[in-house]
Image (cartoon, rainbow, N blue to C red):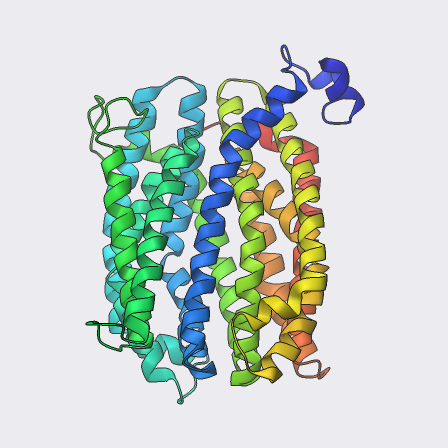
Length: 464
């Protein structure tokens, strides 16, 4: 099948290292990993959206109280996110090298690091909840609810972190269904107890915003139990019975930290940028901020498809580089790009013509629905760039090229997006529209630079 891949522009003849699989096999392998990851990401986004819908029955202040905690929570988890980029990349390489002991060593070292980091972050988040939220732009009208919400979910941060780390290693080995099932179970618990605790159903007390936080924490704990249970199955590639070590040895840590250190810099820039972006929008007022949170919840659902493709691309690129098949890494990366374009085309029409309906699911306030439906049109025009850049970035992360991603994140997310947002929102007087125009320009810039990097092939020379 060389002709298909060369004629279609996926790979040049001089890049071919060995026999190429059939077209059907390439797409089958890709989708086998991608669909559980996409479903998992969709469920995570969906439960966040349902959280907002359920809390939305309490009014726009409750929506703002829950939404304002998102960026502080992600900042506290930034170290875990960056660690897991390294865990996934190294696990994928070890799987490609058929080094099962190395993959299990990577997982166990990750668990030890995640435990230490997450306990520290949870403690800091609980103690400094109020100043963190005030800095994020929380208003006096909902600061107390926001504090209660943030402090409650801090109890679940260690469990969430360990679940994320275990699932990151499993993804690197191609086991994306494990993360999918842990999230399905977690989301079901979350939704059920949201219903029972927010409004007080039957014997359960009415806890409102605090009830949503308790439900989220309970769901996180269930996911942790399930993810750990998978490591007690002897037939799993990664398990606690396989002969490997619980240690933070330099030989094991060096390749993880080589990727994670750059990923951490990326996370810092991303979280600073997202934090500044959200804080600027929060200063537009409660109605504008609530509308923004609703639209971001809807947008995050479209992100889930890109995330699924990105995870598949990351795992397959890493595994094939480990097997010394950079040609297959290129093919799988471009396959993900093509699938991303097709999916984002469908999302474009959903946002264009169904935006008003989607926003109305979250709120019945006409000012929010009217503003939100206009914002969803802007969101529609960013979907192609958004989904495609996520897939390209996933390919580079899977190869361990996180230093390049860190630089582009600094330029795009930490500089371009917040500066453009402020200029468009305030001096130019575009309000919330300006914030979403800035978001679209940010996505376009990241797509261009990540696509150029992938096309250069420099990522295929990185060793781990």
